[in-house]
Amino acid sequence: MTETPAKPAAKKTATKTATKTTTAARKTTAEKAPAKKTAAAKAPAAKPAAAKKTTAKKAPAKAPAKKAAPARKPESRVAMVRRARRINRELAELYPYAHPELDFGNPFELLVATVLSAQTTDLRVNQTTPRLFAVCPTPEDMAAIPPEQLEELIRPTGFFRAKAKSLIGLSTALRDRFGGEVPGRLEDLVTLPGVGRKTANVVLGNAFGVPGITVDTHFGRLARRFGWTTAQDAEKVEADVAEIFPKSEWTMLSHRVVFHGRRVCHSRKPACGACPVAPLCPSYGEGETDPEKAKKLLKYELGGQPGQRLKPPADYPGQPALPLAAS
Image (tube, rainbow, N blue to C red):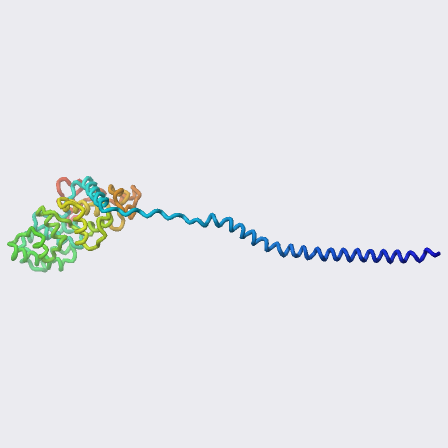
């Protein structure tokens, strides 16, 4: 009977042992839980670090900037002159029939036609002058005609009142100061009403054989596109171009450049793809570069259309223009 009390003691010991084990387990669990939470807390921080590392690796690939294309070497004066003269030779081969595109039979008719060509086409002038010269064949006749009658004769050319005033003024000056004859000197021609350097050079070059550069809108535009000048003023353009070409070439150079400006190198949409001097032109690409599309932009004889003169030279390969009544 003495051994019976020992059983409760064993149970008590077992209970203490179980309690200790449970407490230890809880303590272990509690110790481990913060570790997991800490690991979980650190995990999000690890991703940005990885992202930074990735960014650091990609940065070197983006850092090097593309090298800028080397600047084009400026063209020397000698190179520009050589290129300009070669363009002139190419245009001479393209337009061996280049000529003034105003119909005239003598210096007076050319002078009058040139004055009328301001702010209109040579074609419209050529369609108008036959009737005009039938009524006023000489300076004396034109000086004596009533202004209203002259205005009506030249009305199709536009600005007919101002042009009539100039024509009567220059005809009177020719009659009173030059014996009814057109003078063959630049300094005399520019004293006539309505006559500037451009008109004077047209008359001198084509009626008297005196070399001159005619700077109209076409010539000025192409001279700038070709890099012969940067000037906008006509007299400055004339001076710049005169230094590039020999004097003997001035008149025909003017015709060739004007021909090219009217047929190929138009103001708004030049036909670059059909231009024979494109390899020599620093402005290539300003217009249509597709060859087939560019061909459709060609005008006058190059485009299979009539020219501007009713009476073109015998070597002109195109068709004559139609009279005003038939156009």
